[in-house]
Amino acid sequence: MADPYEELLKKAYANITEIGDNSERFHIPDAKVYLEGKTTVIENFTEIAGYIRREPDHLMKALVGELGTAGKIEGTRAVFNGKFDETMITSAIKKYVDDYVICSECGRPDTRLVKDGRVLLLKCDACGGHRPVRKRRARTEEATNQLEEGAVMDVTIGSISRRGDGVVKIGKYIMYVSKAKPGQTVKVRITRVAGSIVFTERA
Image (cartoon, rainbow, N blue to C red; front, side):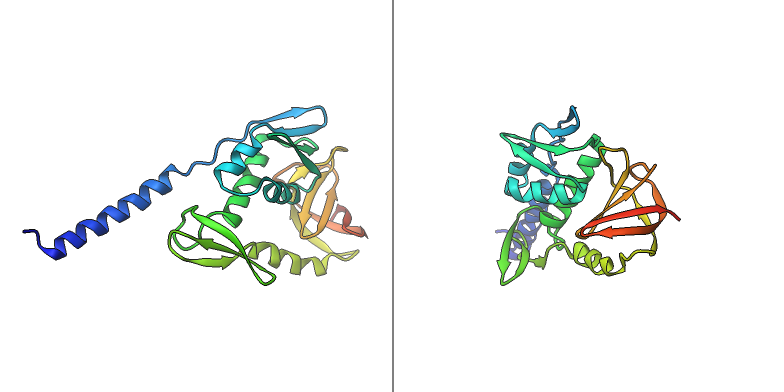
């Protein structure tokens, strides 16, 4: 007859293996990105939303904010104003998954978004952990109090506008930087703030 302790140990190891296998199987489908005129299209948008088990509208709203542009869902695809390469789209989707899908306790994607009053929580069905989502965005919004005319700051370009200016998304603000490329970090001086639009010059 097997020792009860050994049986429990075998079950524990079996469970650990199962968790590892599930984590390894979580691979977000590669975004099928192409340009269509002055727009960027994610052909398999709803497939990606379905795989990570999130509402397409929620994913779309987050990507629009991350890319600093406008967009819409057309059938199974998403269309964004402006030209974005596959690397930028993939990075934006990964940020969404990190914020809204992956459990920070166990690293698994078995999560749900639930409202607790005004707070949106990410709850994990695998380990029972939960946390408020998008803490990084909250900290970013605190920094927007510094977006005043004359302020000097370092920014990293996230995308390119239709006119060819670099675009930076900071909280609710969209900042434009002339002659800048995505991924480039530059020092700028704010010359004008018009609502949520920020104009700059190189400092």
